[in-house]
Length: 117
Image (cartoon, rainbow, N blue to C red; front, side, top):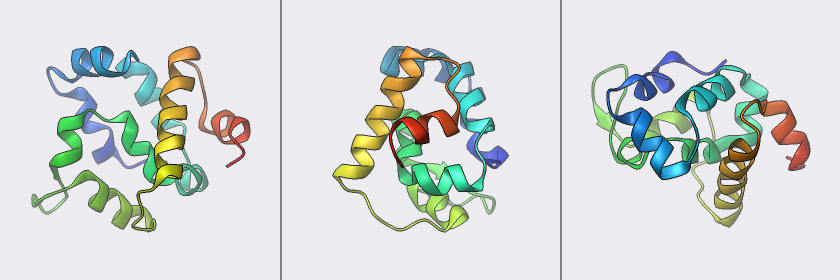
């Protein structure tokens, strides 16, 4: 399951509206999707999960030691993901957004199967 610190940003005051405007996805749907993820799902979807987060979270994120780091660095370290950002990561991230816009009950397993990850 995804760690609670990766769900916390969605509970901030203006994040709900920001995500809905920016990505046209309800925050509740993103949280539901993330809560359904297991370690295997996280490894398969990888760095593309970051596409679900609002832009301001991407540039600044407080880890357990209250040190400001980038979201991607903290996320990769926690889940032992490769330090890569390429067109494949971008393609998967955009597909994730598009799939959640179409199906607000999407599960990680369905997304992985549908996108052959």
